[in-house]
Length: 427
Figure 1 (cartoon, rainbow, N blue to C red):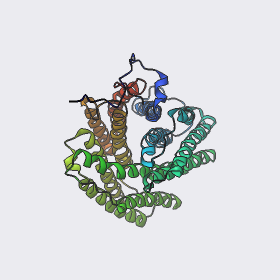
Figure 2: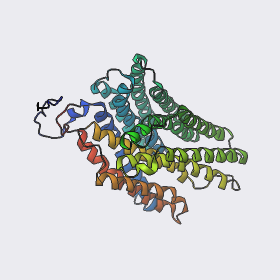
Figure 3: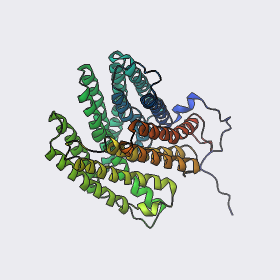
Figure 4: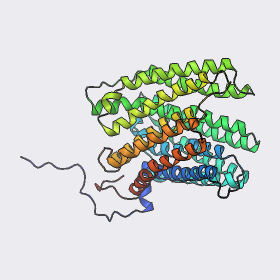
């Protein structure tokens, strides 16, 4: 029987030590490492702010509202860096084009890192740091968006829709960063807060639903052959249209001045309940129940489930608040979307790409799995914090669990990104 020859060269010897140079051996290493750094620093900063609400041991000087600083960096800070690592790993394969070297992403990544560091300092030192920080971040994100747009234009494959949606959404992220800078220069803080929420609907959600529409049915069918690939275009259209409608509700409510009318709240609440019901049905059709037997796949499907639950909670908050004229649950329902949906999908996809493209087994080990469930607990605590007798204490507890979930996970993955692949292959 002839010997089988491996298509890969034998692993080159290496000492396995962490080194900066290893970060630019692959786009996911560089993008994910930068994103993880921003995520962990921003989470620690927000945890510090929440701690001072409960135990004011000496309040730091603040020049910007902490909720604005937090909302901006958690929406437009680390997410674009994670997306950059993903889109230059998966995007060239989708588009059948040559991937740019990871070194080409180094300048825009450094710009964004510098920008978000300046933004966090600006929360304490004022506009002289915050606005230039946003400008640096916008420049870096525009650079990344331009590089991806070039790949899209060079592609000759027929199905470029998912990549095109991600490209358009990336430019929307840039637009929202510029709008934030202009709002801050005009000292229009309420407008800036609306821009943050609009960025979630017009940048973050389109990127995530486009990626999920392409990947979740494929991943599920590959792992569970009894589940057919099912991703009709109308599903993606509905999810994108819902996000645009939500952004319209945000801007319409702001334009009404003194808050949305009860008719506006009723319309929005009913709309969100309908969309939530559709997404919950979609989660079941995509194989939620069957996927629970495979950890890495279950994390993705539970993230999709959170999208449906978030829409339902947002709708219920509108309807239950009709008498008072203000949505109930505070920002709890909003965090079902951002922490529950976005956080769960990010955790699952970053883990999957880091394993699959890092020379490791494509699975969620015990540390990853229980970290994911700690994240779910953090989401539940944050959603229910408005019902606590002391809401500040509830927020702090949710944040501590969030840090307990993402801290070890993030530090572990950072240690991977700076080390060579254990199988000795490049990348």
